[in-house]
Image 1 (tube, rainbow, N blue to C red):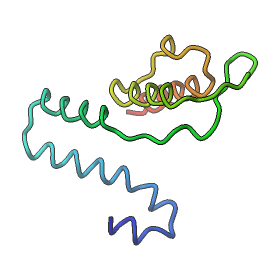
Image 2: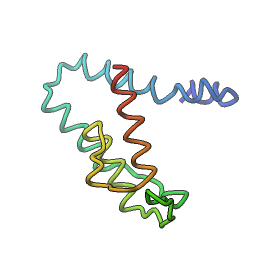
Image 3: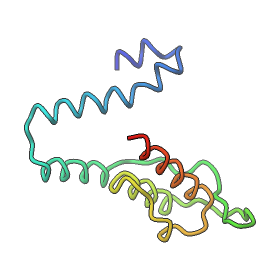
Length: 113
């Protein structure tokens, strides 16, 4: 929180906060010598209880780009699938332009690892 307060004026430093928190959480979990099953249970519980804001814009079908309302139900399903599995199954969310874009970004990020 101190880092966030001190970096409020710097967008770059502010954007680094989630990565810093994730690294700290990983270090704590590694020091606790938890089993992979316990870690998975903790992660799944956190994902299931995550409070998400409603979507701020409509989504678009592809092809054609026809707009449709991005419901909280659908957007939460997309986020939870991405967080729990690390990927998005396009078959679960067909023809939604933004989901296809996320899928491409996830593939690019996974190639870097």
